Image (tube, rainbow, N blue to C red; front, side):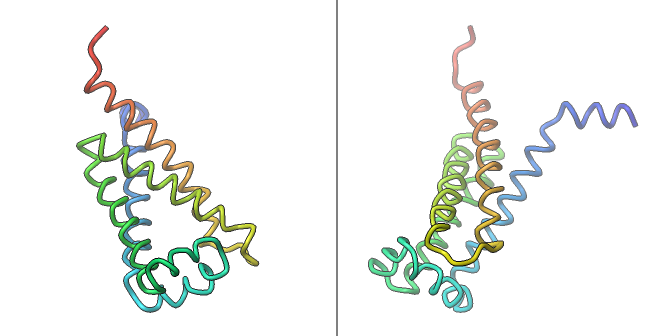
Length: 145
């Protein structure tokens, strides 16, 4: 038991689990953006906020698809980030920016729900993954002292 605990403490299993969790959330919500139920769910939320600019630029469906593309890029970059930290860094930044963007809607919204609350955790998770991926990237490409 002690050896298993020691291996876990000195492994990156926690980071892998965090990465998989963020990938799952972005894959799920990113995929939803392509379906009518999510387009309809987002419309009253986005219409009442500064993100309405997406509807002005792309229309209601196009705005949802745009968000789906961004979230798909994020989870694909995070997946590749298991092996290539530079892709993980891109995904991590998208996760953080997405969370901040969603939280910036709070003053314009009338309710606080899981759609918004999850982004608090995603910002923290994105920051932890960003730190981990930056360390891996720098360790790989920095000259030895």
